[in-house]
Image 1 (cartoon, rainbow, N blue to C red):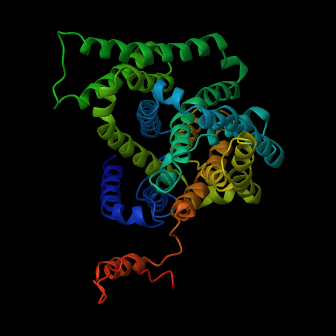
Image 2: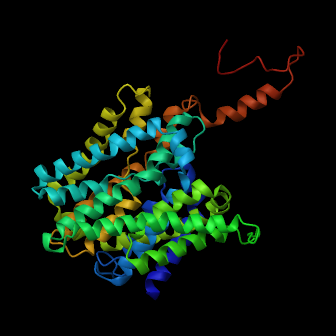
Image 3: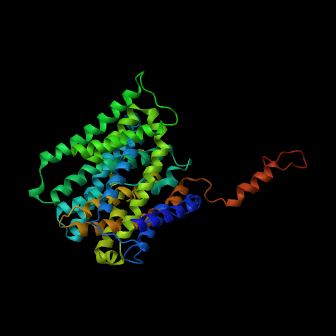
Length: 420
């Protein structure tokens, strides 16, 4: 534990020091933690020694996914969903299930997996991660509807894919362990806890007897999240649906609590994300990457270059999006944090196909992180009208425009790029 903590602290400090550079180049913080985990893990240097069945792995995966789903839910209250549902609705209502099915078909016919295991892989790889589209979403020259589409889709699809992962994992565990009534109760209880706890907490604060100070206000949503986690643990309700439902409830009924927690919550979620990526990288070894064979790598390529693009193309027929916008949405379906944690959950589940499923998920995520984290800047420049203008042009042009002209002109009508 001490070695892992030291390694995480060192990599986190390096990531902070390089964060400004990462925003301007193809360097990715997520890729940094993944590669660091791989290099420090048993497969290379052996500094971090972890086993898939370790309690630390399971606990970290659980807490990380809970935190991220809670903050994801807080991005998309019912107001946003109602006001911006036309395009995200296509991506979530059609794109998500189509991506799941196409991925499952590839896993079944290319790799020979059973349908349940193939569907489980499809559900794990269906969610997208907004981290790798940061340069696209943060570029003001990208059409607002495209940025909103990517934001809403990536914020919601983790939670929508979760029930499929849970059900397929339960079925894969064997019919003797599958009790649909108990599973339905667990899922339903999770949603009830996720709605009831934050609603009561927010209503209490709105009474005349209670009021949060400015200093403590960011802790309000944190306390709500911890209460939801504790209630889910105590009642055996599904923690992840509870977290996602709680986030949406806070965003819907407590806009002030949502706003005060936003920056603080994002930092907490980011720390858990990066820790999970480090652990995930440490579990990946050269032997694992080679064990899937060429079929496994071909599957990973098809999952990235075929499943998502085809699903998005079908989903956005006659949607009004330009070809360039559709291409950007189709490409930025990276497999990131949610898929990492779902893969870790499967690995610790003990199902017969846990190892091959994890191996296929791992190589797909590795390929996705390396490809998407190095192309977000490039794709963002598709929407930059000045992408072919040299960097020095802006400085020179401003100087020329400010320089007085001998004839008394200000120089504003003299543009060196025009040649006219």
